[in-house]
Image (cartoon, rainbow, N blue to C red; front, top):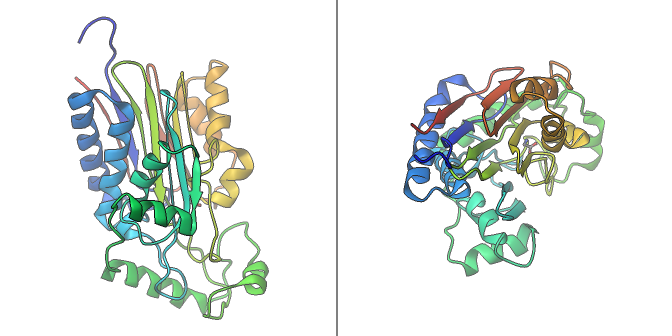
Length: 303
Ligand code: GLY
């Protein structure tokens, strides 16, 4: 590695509040990202391969592991990519696409930055992208758990008023005030050896949620941001994250000279403890993660 170059770095997470025992999936994703960096040095390609790995894993709330809607069959997913070469693409509420993060990457090559729902799905089909995998037993088990919790009287998500779910619910299944459930994401941030930064995110969204609901993951500056000083990805309840423009807010603190680990902690501490939040980031010199309820993640640096 010449003096003009710096060591590439990768941080991958599997979702705020997701089981720690799934961290091996993040390790595999980060290894593949580092191998991609070795192959072509492109930070965005590395971030995308990391997120694709987690979308295909089946244990994470993204891609083949996405949370089911209350009808037990509807899946709507969001994803995003951004880098310091100017590539920016996001997709929201898309159905029946195997790897939404690859679709977000493809959208970055169109004249647009965001496509949603049917239009996004049509683009995926026209590009020959495969449809979603059949619903797995893992997804059905998670769904059954939510349905069981629906019988309870615990708020669906901390800070979210269940009466609104009750009033506007648009699934056929009646809603009876469910307990908190899935709202995690997968994400990767990468520093390339050439000093470029990239971020990629993907999620099956929250469960339960209204059809058409979109969280923070495809919203620039909320779930993700990349600039000349680094890249940031957020995970947790999107309805809370968007109110803080979390990823851009954290990046702003870095612009003002704050160390990355301090900025991530300050970002997570904006939220009450019962709201699961996680952040990962890379800068020119640092690669860090921080969360408030446990989060599978890993960080790796090129040798
Ligand atoms: N952070 C994922 C979501 O709220 O959709």
